[in-house]
Structures are given as C-alpha cells and as structure tokens.
Length: 150
Image (cartoon, rainbow, N blue to C red):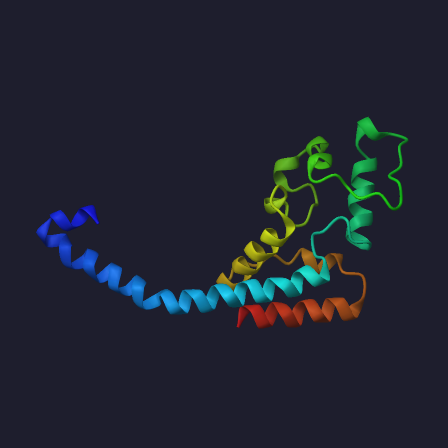
C-alpha cells in the first residue's frame, strides 16, 4: 500500500491487489480441502502418542530408556501429558523419533492441518506410514496421501 507513492511501483501494487482479490475464491476452496483432508489423517491417529499402536509403544520405550526413568514403567492406560513428557528427551530438537515433532506444542488438529498443507505443497514426510499397525491402515494412508497430493 505504501509503495503506491512511487509512480513506477503504483501499477505493480494495483496488480498484486487485483490478483489476490481474484484468487480469494480459490484460496477459500483450497483451505476447505486442506481442512477436510486433514480429518482423514486425524482419524488414522498419525503422530498421536495417545492412540494405541506401534507408535505409542515406541514412544513409551523411548521414555523408559531415559536415564531419569530407569526401572520405571508407564501405566498401560495412562495418556501422556501433552507435551511436557518430551522435554526430557535428549536430542529433542532433531525429533528423537517422534512423528510430526515440528508440531509437538500445537493442538493435534492444527498439526494435522499443517501436515496436510505440507503434503499438498510437495513437502513430503514418509515417517508416519512406518508407524501404522496393519496393512489396511498402510494402504489407506497411501491412498489418502495420493488424494491429498493430486
């Protein structure tokens, strides 16, 4: 807006505002699609350490391997406090084997939305499919991945 004061930039600023206003309908539709597709991944429970499965087991094993937790066991039906448990992990900044660790401090639903947005832009993360228990879940993940991508 402030660049309009320069005569040689005025037409560029006007063009950018026109393009953004023309794209508003597409961006609304794209946002609806991303939110809709993120619901599929939320149903699968990817990256949710409170859903029973291989991923929860691997997170519990990582927690039990911490020096401060030697000899302790995690109660079977207890959920992880979110996300304070993982502050103790060494090498926390590199992910430490946690799925979607970039979104650890965000609400899970928002994390699924951002992960779906990344997939739709071509920023792929193939780690979640390795933590699925059954072949049907794995096939469903890849079907949804292709659906989101294309």
